[in-house]
Image 1 (cartoon, rainbow, N blue to C red):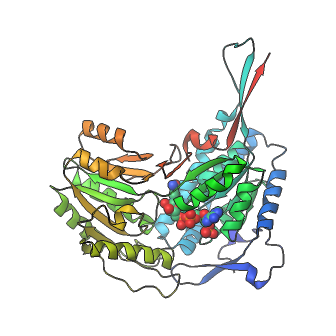
Image 2 (image 1 turned 180 degrees about the vertical axis):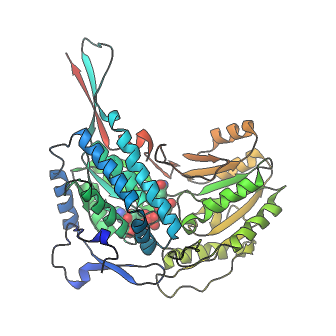
Image 3 (image 1 turned 90 degrees about the vertical axis):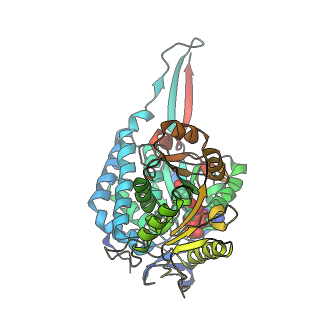
Length: 479
Ligand code: NAP
């Protein structure tokens, strides 16, 4: 039943038990609807057992060199199995195979990067004798880490959490998204092959609410790292508040993409196409609002529409596909509602049409769509559309576009295109976004800290900061 040899023999906490039929859920191919796997709908008790097992696996703490070797081995295994992992991602998510391969490499980059950061976990002695004492600073493993991941990058969103958790000496209990749990199972199988002992990583599949509550309440879970919607992030923050846990929150975005009149329009166009349509527009860092200076708005919008119309929508397994299906019918409905709302409000559609609503939760294909005349009150501006829709507005000057860009509760990513260094500096300082692309549409990299401002969350992934999320600092003053 499982679609890959990488998934053979992966036992989840409850998978060995005989479960009645209604205790399993299906994972489907997002293009064809074919059932790829049946996985257990675990309960709160299963989640609690998983945390207990992870807590029991914390001691004895493996030496730093052992943990470094795990990370290096996992990075190597990810590279060695790149095409098979890419196939799993595409089957369960729907994105084009070429993008899935890039996702595998990106994920391997986190393991390789954190393997190189292990020395930062060594105890540090302050050079001065202070208060007549010798001071040593230790970075201790925080404990069990609860890792909750979304479906849009099923492998990478876990890799950026699991790599630093293992590096720090934590054990992990993972709740993958119900839509895409197979990538998680595959990487956990590779971690086992890399020598990570059973128990140090546990996967819990099933209804998110009860599993999430266990992770929030169980005293052995000391860190929760969550990537997903701001709505669920707020719920988790409330649920953990009485239990005082560390939280890293990577939440929703509403990225502006600003093109000034002094920009290189060809470079801006290329960057927008790559940034906007990756994963069919279903990424937290992808452009949601495009602001083009009024002097070039018409030519730029036409060029975007022309390029968008040429993108091929279809099965991600076909190497010529540029955009796969949306994750499900709810995703399709949201995109369709945003476009309909914009058209009702007076926007013009330069590319795209009204596709038929899918009959099922799969096969939710939506054509690349370009809208102009977009206004701030429209849904495409106020909320993440999470689909292949380019929503273009115009602006006259810096202050106007800065105010428009910042007028959102979110603050994850922003992009600006200008050749004027003074303007770039002024804008960047005042843009309230954790990631800013200047003359590039590129997203995060393992080596740099990534995360949001405002309601896009707190905590960072990648960079040294991403490692410290899984450490508790302990100071010893020795008299
Ligand atoms: P989501 O609905 O919030 O789900 C994310 C994860 O949380 C899934 O594993 C989900 O499980 C789980 N979950 C849902 N309700 C829960 C609860 N009550 N308690 C505990 N866990 C719960 O988000 P999504 O639709 O998968 O992902 C899209 C969102 O993620 C977008 O807003 C996007 O911007 C954001 N995102 C942010 C980043 C970033 O780095 N900032 C990166 C990627 C995505 P089920 O699947 O079982 O429901």
